[in-house]
Length: 372
Ligand code: GLA
Image 1 (spheres, rainbow, N blue to C red):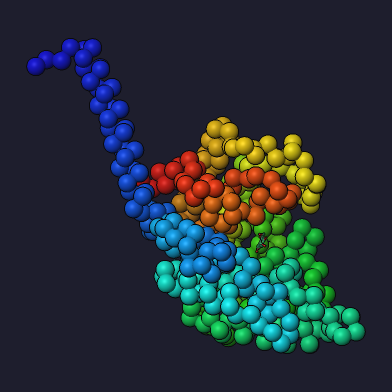
Image 2 (tube, rainbow, N blue to C red; image 1 turned 120 degrees about the vertical axis):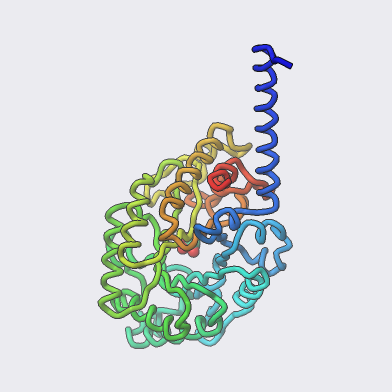
């Protein structure tokens, strides 16, 4: 039977709609069975930060979501000094052990975060009984035994360690207790001790805003410094706390290339995209509803911008997938994100790929569609 031109057009429209709907259904069924970890399996691992409510309760929360979407996990505060080693003689291994057991049951790549940082240390760490800063020799031996104990306990089970976090900032070396007592040598020694404790663990340096050229140069210099000191370092953690327009993605790309050319593997270690009104660096104003415009829900236009932003970020990541080992979200759903409370407490933010009910957002779909 010959189709009239009109009928042909009508049937073609019907066919296209039907194909589009089939494509949507096929996409939905593929991504229901398979998650981001499968879609990006030939590119890099897809990781997430998890909290004790998840791993201490055997994943009751997110029981299906985690194994479907992720193949790497990081614990938020579990391994920070103040939690795992709250006083000189007291260790609390319960959270770390449970995190590792939980991750092993799911065959996850596990990242220990973090051995040495300026924050979340017990107040007594740097001070002697007289309340004065302890001398470099004493602090060095505390640091060595701390790293050796933690890394040795999870040897062969935690695959990568953020050995040092945020040791330089916009002003130069961060003037924390470590630096004031030992100078920058503490950084090199931390890597040497971690390598001795577990020769197979991947050792990372982790830091923020490394797309900013001055910050990138600082950390590239830090890597040279470590190499001169024979400190073993394998990878860089580019944290990736982004907004809808910061950083410029070409600068982000330049950082991936620059650190890779230094011989380091790349981990995007703390990815999220803040959608709330921006504040200047180091501004921590009081809560103001004008700075919290999406309490009742994210407008479609902003959700579209978030989806486009994630798509562009993942396009860059895919272009450089040969250099990248892991892309790690800083949380699972928007409820979990620190961005609800930083830099102002109590706002409602939407920085991740899953909404407050654990459902996929449009940002999830734009990312997944890059691989379907
Ligand atoms: C930095 C640290 C993380 C975490 C965040 C805030 O990025 O690396 O451990 O404390 O700040 O959640």
